[in-house]
Amino acid sequence: MPFAAQRIGLTGGIGSGKSTVGRLLVARGALLVDADAIARQVTAPGGAAIHEILRRFGSAAITADGAMDRDRMRQLAFNDPTVKQQLEAIIHPLVSQETLRQYEQAVRAGSSCIVFDIPLLVESGRWRQQLDRVLVVDCSEATQIARVVAREKGRSGWTRDVVEKIIAAQASRAQRLAAADICLYNDNLSLEALGLQVTQLARRFGL
Image 1 (cartoon, rainbow, N blue to C red):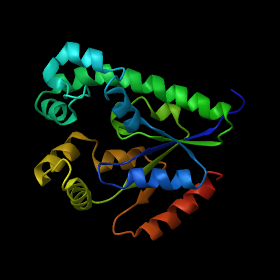
Image 2: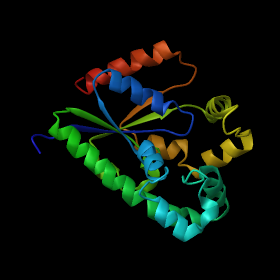
Image 3: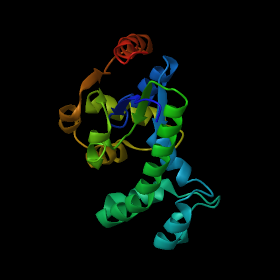
């Protein structure tokens, strides 16, 4: 590789505003590698994970258009840790492979700061040693719930109970904060105020 780009791990609980912070960093010159977007890509129609998901879980796990049925598999994973482990064993290696490919491509293209948006950075246990800094976007659980319910209204229709289950399945706030090199507290911030904080961070990252 021509040089070592700065590697920033970006994480936060559902509804924290992590994805918004990622977009703001991109607008300030960072290159984003989005693990969740890659996971959606490999479970989309024709995605690299579909054949094995179909073999392991059957046709009920696949929607009519050939994608993984995310809501069904999420519910199964909530109720059975074995399903969660089996699904992760299919998807995570594919995500890691594509993440590495995008990282190497970005380095070859001359990117000096690469942000890895990794929802399960803390949970995975394997990412920390691959990163220079971990940026955690934090907010209260009440704010997480309110944001997600508002965001999903008219789409998936997630109830408060569903969002609480998702939060419970993720690392706790304390665990994420313990893993953080930098914490951005995104509670009751306007988009403008959040943008100002991200601008300050971008300067620290050499952007």
